Image 1 (cartoon, rainbow, N blue to C red):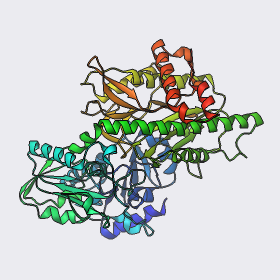
Image 2: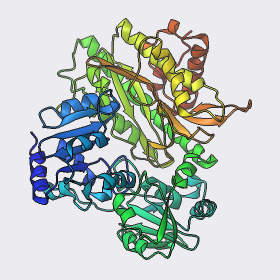
Image 3: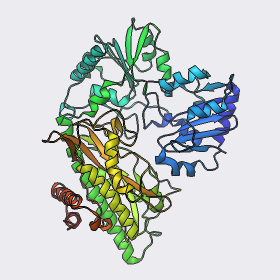
Image 4: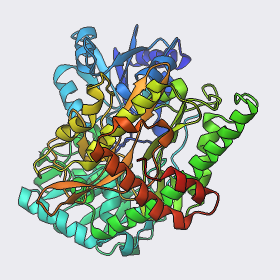
Length: 586
């Protein structure tokens, strides 16, 4: 059993707490969090980016989704924490588990600053609660501190719209909704609205902030006390935690909040004289619909990212081919998952304007590739051999855009089944890339297109097919999604989404093929996709006869575009290698 779990229970007993909840987020509902907020990871030992821990005096459970089932099972072994596979038959939800374990007088506790309001409200109706306890923080002796980053403005050439124009649009939405005030807590939305960026959160160029807007004022609450306020004319900058007291002083009226993102504690600070309107933050949809300048910048970022990827794949395949000639199994070569990931980062950071990665690179060889969101550690770092698949999911934060790409790379000989599985996933990817659909089409319908070739062969994958991608912001953004669950949000021109079907054979290998795609209006009145990512698919893994004529034509055309766009930026021998990799397959 983990010592942290023991210490947490001692604190629970000290406060008379029967059950304690630790989610994976921060004061803003963020997906990726600053090290200061990794309390769930500290207590449980599970390092995945999604999960919720529930602890009682005798038991502990951790809920996570299908991306992390394999990883969580391994990391929780011997911890005293049971894995709860979300969405699986017979697995109770957190709410159902609480009903089963809590008695009438028991107290449920959590840190209300990191619990969303909707969940907190549901809990207060059922249980005696305390929302003022950060118990994980009390036992975390060497907890990292938050050091606010420098905040910087983006030029109009990158944003395509001034912050005053964006504020005007938000205020127009507020007026039409009958809201007097709008409280914004999403870091991505605040960064987009004010055309500012920072580095308070790993891989996401945002800064800790709240925003409070009316028709007469715009308040921005920052941790960074050195921010140059003159950058924002007409915006008042206040200390970060002043948002709580300022909410209490607001005159009577209606305040708009997004319950999916606003914390329970923050809502509790809103006085009863204010009517709360639960409305999706209008900035979310506004920022999802990229303007012409944002799209042009993103296209440019993907060209640079394609150069980095091609240089990496050429280096990797050349190295593995040399190892194969020598009969080297990789044991003495130093070629591992982490070594490959590190070299890819070097290739990216050589590109002009690459400021950071957009997430922690997934580099999974063989059976590790079957772990959907695998993260190599020194303990799990596999040596690469000149055979089988290496799955690499990665991306960069450039001065002109955010990228996300996955390629599954043949390091040497493959079995017939590996090739057939790869080609099946590729067919799903191509079919979605070629899709034409009506403006009313939702993500669940598009998801079915990508899965169809896999389901025909009895294959499937336990994750969505596509997520929205921000512009110099989060690599995972809404409101659009391409997944079986879908949302009420239809895809519209200007939205950038990933296209990433996959297949994972536990204990053997994983395959995922991902490009970013832009939703565009077609002359027919239908919608379709423009592929933004440029990097060849692995021809060594493709069974050409499995492709339809239409799929093959798309693939040959795509590879021709890859060569046309990237070759002028490459030097020999990489350019010559790309000639062979992008030639027509038939």
